[in-house]
Structure formats: C-alpha cells, structure tokens
Length: 371
Image (cartoon, rainbow, N blue to C red; front, side, top):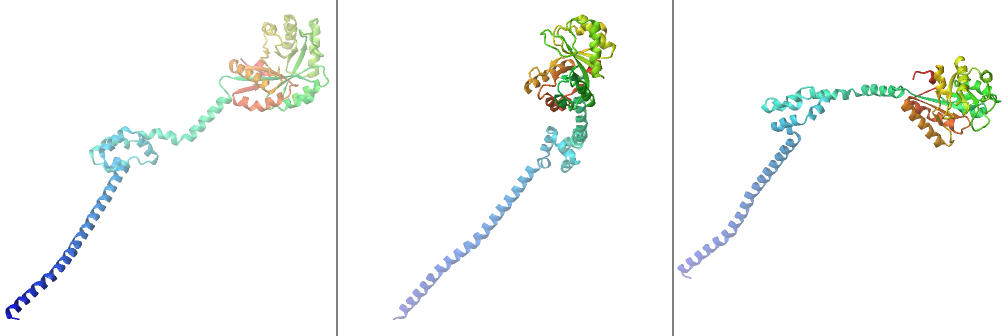
C-alpha cells in the first residue's frame, strides 16, 4: 500500500466514525432536553388553573351568601323593598350588624331604617302572646257562660207520683229541674218529699177536664164545679204535697179555655203565692188573658219533649226549644217521668247546654225573672 492510499484510508475511517457517533448522541440529547423543558411548564399551568378555579369559587360563594354586604346597590334595594328583614332580626336584638361593612359608604344611608326600632315593634305583641291569649280565652269563656243576652231553659217533668223508680233518674240530674206531681196517687206525697230532698222544685200537676173525655185522675177540676168546689179541691191537693212552689195543668183543654174557671184558679194562685205554668194543651187557652186581667205573671209551655219517645225525636224537640231560647231569650220544655231514656238524655247534654251559653233554671224563677 502506498502512502497516499493509506492516507486516504485513514481519512475515510476518521470521517465515518465521527458521523456515526454524533447522530445518535444528538438525537438522545434533543429528547431529554424537550421533556425537561415541557414538564415544569405543564405543572405550572395546572397549578395556575387550579388556584384561579379555587379563587373563583370562593368569590362566587361569598357573593351568593352575602348579597347585601358585597354589593351596596343590592343592599340599598333590599332594605327598601323587603321590610321583613328587620322583623327577623329584631328578636335577636342585633338589627344593626348587617349594616356595619358598608357604614362608611354612601349606599349605606338608605339602610338607616334597618337601624331604627320601628319595624321591631309589631313583633313585641307576638313575644308576649301567651298572657294576651290567656286573657282573650278567659274573656271568651266568660262570654260563652254569661252571654250578654240571657238564654234560659226550663225543664219540667210531669206525672210524678205514679212510680218512684221512674222518678229516681231525674233526681240525679245535675242542674235545676222542676218536677210536677199528680195528687191523690199512692206515691204522690213521697215523690214530693224526695224531689225536695234532691234539691229540685216541686209543682202540683193539677188534673183538669179535657175535651176528649179522658179521665184526668184523682183531685181533678171539672167544668161543672163551682168556684168554692174548685178552691176546696186546690187546697186539698196543695196540702197533700206541701210545700209546693207552683202549679201546671194535667190535660185540662176544657178548663183552660174557660175564662171563669181560669179566673177562679189563678185568683187562688195569686192569693197563696203560687206560680202557674200553662201546659198549653189547647190553642184556645184563656190563661194568659185572664192572668193579665188579674195583674199577675204566668208562664207557658213551648215544647213537649216526648210526644215521641225515641231518642232522636226527643233530641229534635229539645233542639227546637234551644232555637226558641235563642230567639226569645227563654224556653219552657215539658217531658214525663215515664219516657224511657229522657233522664239520661238530659243528664248527658247538661254540660253542652251550659257550654253553649244556656242558663238552666226552675219554672218559678223563670216566671218571676225580668223579661
């Protein structure tokens, strides 16, 4: 090999080796340098995005929760259009606190009504409502028990003296009651004694002649009797049951329509201090006109409770009596000892009558009360 050829060989070798060694080194360096430069940039961008997102959420949440504090314009509008805000704050005694953040700014001036105590005044009666409600309830109770316009009920139970067993439930009635006793029967005197012992009022249930010719019972007054005979009969009957507060007629459609007979009977009552209730067994009764002529006050029956003895019918009749009491200030209702269930019906409803504002009294007190 010549020197020239060797030189070219060596030169070619040297040229090739650097070129083969440099290419892979340069490529590796480019890859490593690009990753190192990219990763920090990515982390920085992500961090900035995350921080900006958190700050944005905080600002949005604060604005939503405190529209009055962060926006003076909204605060001014809210304090004018919504008077309920100071009312809600008044019970806490801190109505001024929401206005502090804007105390130095001009928009805070319209918020001055919030500082004032006027909106809180309507709340005070609510805080003190318990005693007010109690006073109001007591007043209403007093009105229901003692109404301005008196509504009086009188219950008269007729035909006592036939059976003491039928009488007993009425003696247990919790309120005032007038019980009329028939004369001349085996249990008449004992019935009158038991009625007085129970604190109830005794009336003579005076038998009188009726249009239908039915036998009225012992001690009756008939149309053929003279004035002396009528007075004698009355004296005997009152003596049997004495002491007696008053009298009402048993049957008597003929006698009560007779002015002369009624004048004799009512004159006897007036001279002996006896009250009279017209049972109104006829629409032709002359009792009221005769009493007016004698200058005396009498009473008259408004309702027969037990024309039908089933419970619902008796309730209906009593309700009619209550309506009359509402309209006229009082009602006289008559029932009988022999009506099954009447005593228990009256006893069960006694409290209802009182709660509805009705005053129960006896027949004699009703007649003599101012009306």
